[in-house]
Image 1: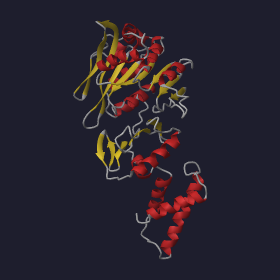
Image 2: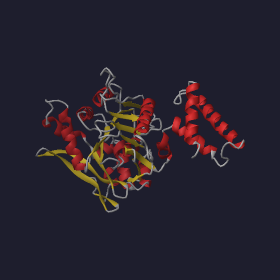
Image 3: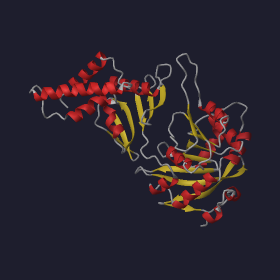
Length: 406
């Protein structure tokens, strides 16, 4: 658009002259945009500008550049795009349906830095040489991750993960083709019965979406406490408190980690706790909480249900030197409950690959798993109730043996 550079300069000058904060003074910012657009329209009518200019489009470009996120705003507005990432000035990528594509967008190093600064200001987070990584949640719910040099080799690395499909109930995933109606009924029954659920899968397999859908099946009278590194779940349950971690201040104080959140959640009268994802020693605190009889859910990166359980037996050992596998392994066997493993295929389809139950037994230091559903082609094959605790389901009026009768 021919008038864009001059118009953007005019808007920024007007913003400075009027002492407007574009991120806060929305009405004043809208007035400034209107004033600049009106001046260009008058110039066009007087023959000093082009009558072919699309002034509505020009206004949107100016809004994106000064108030929004500039060159990335169209991708944020595109509902088909799930993730945006920048590897460098000529390497802006997006993902649709799990498939990556290189865009034609070119962006300078300075534009990247300006965008990051604006995003972090909105999120209330910071980035500096002493802390070159940052996770933040944007106003639209997107998750931002930034890495700066010298951690990166040159340009800053920027990822924005959007949440396009917000499944609120298990039935939404059935309609999306992620799992069968029988598997959905089983998972809903397991949530009602108070079973612990571990959701596993690779990055972008849909773990957060699955936990959100499972949380939609929690009875309305229960109080839920969620613990996350960055707000992602966005539960709509009636009684829910969401907590996220906090970075340390410039003085190195005030940091609140995931372990602290899990511990504090136990003091908040929870009926269930949800840990967005366990990666490190917080797995120990989660196990301790679940071992007290408190139902919960979490997600973990893994390539199968078996690997998810093996990893859950290892991560708690990071908590302290005196934490041993002699405590962790039987605790996992007693508390892990149901494992839902998700897959992402080459076509970008996110589906449940297997559902298994932890039997409670340990053989030669290995927690025993029993399959409930396994994927065979496009179908989820049901293996029957197996080692499930039928009494837990019966307490909430569910005959799980009949439900899973092959």
